[in-house]
Image 1 (tube, one colour):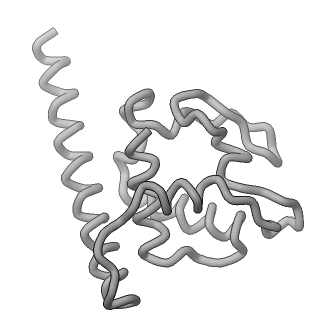
Image 2 (tube, helix red, strand yellow; image 1 turned 180 degrees about the vertical axis):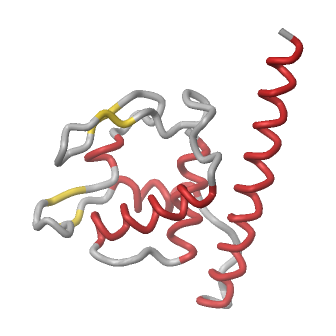
Length: 133
């Protein structure tokens, strides 16, 4: 049991370090994009995550269309009906542990919903929103 706890602790520390580094990188990029930028904001992240847009497939869609409103629950892809594990790290500790996957999915999902790549501030806002859940 102690070894399992140690492994979980090491994974958690690794996750927080890598994600914190990525958030710091996004913060630097956001400051370059907007010198008045101060910090990421959960409320802005929620607005980005829940607002609906005509997505790349011509249908009205939001992040919640696939991930649902309750990020602690399993949901399904709007287009494919494929199961999506909870986004919340509280419900799914393996979420957001691989920064390369986080970057890939942020890029893909912004493109699907907004038809463009998200700004550094938008990505950071969405991440702090997800982390708050």
